[in-house]
Length: 346
Image 1 (cartoon, rainbow, N blue to C red):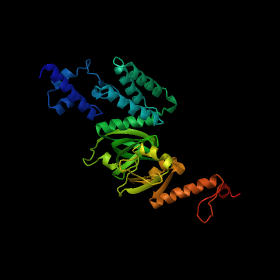
Image 2 (cartoon, helix red, strand yellow):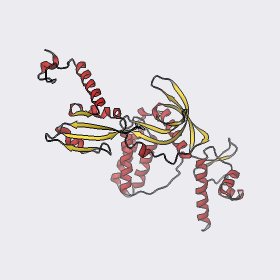
Image 3 (tube, rainbow, N blue to C red):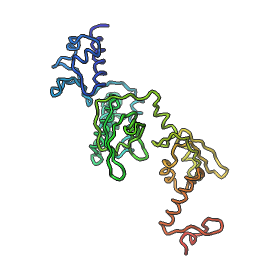
Image 4 (cartoon, one colour):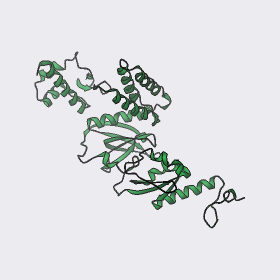
């Protein structure tokens, strides 16, 4: 290994070390943790020639710290990989009600990097980034600050102190170890899963309801058996339970059957066709109530067959909706309305 390679490897070790210690380290502490002489570290980390992304905090004992807002990584992408990232970022932009300048910045960097190869795709990437930047009406500094703190804490394995606001306005403070951050398209929100103290158990926070977050010095370890993919495998979105999943059976009208088939709504779904052209849709879902907004969206083109509790809830909603529009439940022997008079009672 030549001198340049050795220096590059050593600086990478230092970056990883500083990332794990957001409070910073002195040169002596870095040397001790890397098992080298302090003079060696001094050569790599001279006060006036620090590597990009590393700075010396004069107000904190001259500790060396990593600037987490700096460009810390480099990567190369193929055209098709860039398009995949573009689609993911656009989905983020259209399925969240919060402005995210980091997403716009990432998209802009991709667009600029691609300019010399393809003006068509790069132009769209840059325009998408500009549109995301202009969404000032959706800027929420509290949300962005909390999300950034959670991201840094997750990356450096540091606990955070969070303030969580309940539906009734009460605010509670917890010590929290972030394990995973998950977007939730249905509610245009993001959630963080982790260990909450108290009660010392895994819980999920809707990030929009966190009013503050402060990174603590105390570290944590994500359990080896924690698998967010497995945890959320039966969830419709973000709701999960330790209980067995529930079988959901829906019957879709022939006029929407093809549309339903076009999308894989859940990994466990099973489809079958009826003689009249209707579509039976079945899946194993952790918490059926999480599906209600999606089911409601199909209106009268879907009928809940099971479970009974979900069917009864939808029946109740249908009755309430009818009454809201001045209709009433038919008293015909068949239990079905035959004419408009049955609905309006004329």
